[in-house]
Length: 322
Image (tube, rainbow, N blue to C red; front, top):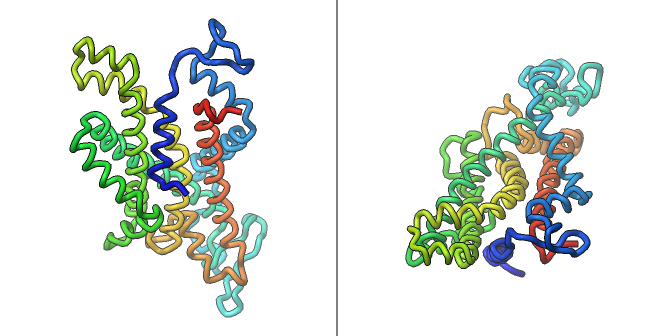
C-alpha cells in the first residue's frame, strides 16, 4: 500500500501536468470549440450525481449552521426538562411537544443542541483547515521556490509528520495543552493538515516550474521572486484548493474524535457533535439515540465533503475522466 507521502506526490505530479489550454470536449473534439480546463471540469461536475449529492449535503449543513441560533427552539444550556430525568431508572425526557428529539441526560433540549452543535463543528473544521492551509502554503512555497537545503529540511520535517497517523498526531498535540479548549482542538487538527498541503504544493510547484512559460520567463531574465509569485504559485494552487475540500472532511472527523476522547472544551454548555457523542457513551445501552444523532450527522457531513472533493479531483484529472 502506498504511503500518504507517495499518494500526495502522485496527486501533485498529475495536477502539475494538466495544462490550461484547449482540451477535448465530451465528444472528443478539440479546436475552436475546445473548453478551458475549468469549464470542462464544471461541465462534468454538473453531470456527476455524486458531486450533486455532496454539494446538497454541504449546502444544507452550512445553511443549518448559519441559521442555528434562530432555528434552535430553546437555549441549549438550559435544563428545561430536568424534572423528567431519573438517574436511578436511566430515564431521560422522551420526544414530546416542543421537544421533537426529547432531552439529554441533563434535561437539555436535544434538537437545540444538535443545531448549535452544527455551528461549532463547522467553525472548528473551517478554522483548522484555513490555519493548516496557511501553514502548508508557507512551507510548500519555501520548499518549491528555493530548493536545495531549504527543500531538504522542510521535506524531512514534513515526511516525519506524515509518517505518524493523523489522529494519533492530533491526539498527541491536543494532550500537550494544560487546559483543553476549543482552540486547542482547532490548533491540533490544523497542525496535522500542514504537511499535507505543504507536500502537495511543493510537488505541484516543481512540476509547474518546468513548464514552457516559466522557462521563457527565466530566459528573459525575470527575477526569481516574480517568477514564483506571478507564474509558479498561482498555477499551483488549484490542486491545493481541491485538497482543502477533502481535508475539511478529515478535520470534522479528527475534531470529533478529539472531543470524544475528552480533549475538547471542558464546558459543554456550548454543544459540539463530537463532545455530545462522548457524553452519550455512558448511556449507549439504554439511550442509544443520544449517540446516534451526533454520530449520524458527523458521518453524513464528512461524506458530503468527501464526495465533493473526490468529484472535483476526478474532474480535474484527465486520467480519471469517465
